[in-house]
Length: 234
Length: 234
DNA sequence: ATTTTTGTTAATGTAAGGTTAAAAGGAAGA
DNA sequence: TCTTCCTTTTAACCTTACATTAACAAAAAT
Image (tube, rainbow over all chains, first blue to last red; front, side):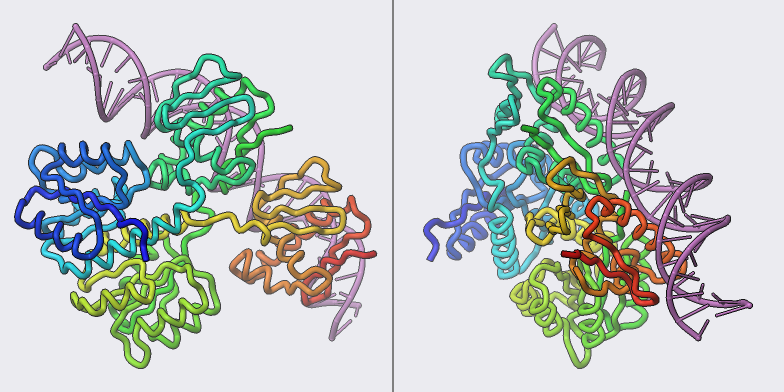
């Protein structure tokens, strides 16, 4: 049926609950790595590729949100589910802001959790068809290495890009010659779509245009009300 | 900022709760269509394009799941959120089976609902893959790319089209050589059919005629009181 | 003949985008 | 803790793009 088991990073400080949950997930054919606190969670996250992270919110030293933010810096795509102790509205809202995919209030029904896991992993699987592991792009006479965050012109000295510059250019490159919808960048990179994030994005477009000026064949065009288009003229 | 408000189909039989929820959503910048039962819900669904459906599970005659199934047959992509009366595990599981994107237990916090709506709509926006072919038309010696909103004559320099110009020309092209009813354009593009939108449309017809003048074989004819017809003479 | 519908151009108001600079945040080091 | 450097956001100001409305002319229908 499935060649490889899906891998879940479970970060939960309560040892009893944690191990029970881990066993339950393993019984349901997931490969589970259990970290007992935020620090350990991040270490394990860096070492491996996971299909899903389940993070407890209430943890000593490093709470789930802080951990989520660190994870997001490394990887903008991994699905994250939060386990919140109670129906803390603030927690839920905060969760979505760091890019959570879902949350569950403890105590929760384990079957429901399984269902959510399945739904989320499937969702990601369908999303991740084209833009999978692409981090290197040729943009006219430029080379973008978006893993190391630099841009080289004609193989010369690389210019360092800030995280936002890098993500934005990468997204544009992924849609080369095609529309890169505003909304897409805002939700993927800024994780929020409002007036200010939108203006912020415009500022970054200006920055990128400045970098790209070196090659007059490369330009970022605007499609009013829709988004931007990175075109390479021949 | 907002090109168009996102459209929500709300199917909820409790009139009090339904209207309150509708008003609340409308206050938050969504365009809401409220149906009072499953049958009505499906009718309205067929008539319009929605960005999201919020379905009450417990409804007389046709429950939320049945409705969801019918909706899914028509459209595999619209996000669906279920409102379940209590933490009915069966309901939740059943919901996911019909392809729900999320569910909420009543009573729920309205801000949390907003958050979910936002998250889900954004998620779907992200998935929008480039299904190009539907956006490219050959109109005489012109090429219309209605995704990138430009019109090329004889493969020369593309002319940019405004959103309304583009949509209108696209509709005409879809009905090439055939009647494109006035009303159709008004409801689909202007989303309102009155004296002013009608005059506005005439203005756009004039603009399109100006663009299309380059190819004397292409013209937009008026059918008095009915609509317009894009004809390509041979 | 006159009312309604359409053709066309121009004027107006608003929203979106371009650009630059200043302010605010945040992390690393002193 | 304070300082410094880098990144990001916010603000300000300006330009361009769009859609609507008005105004007047021409066709078509009654």
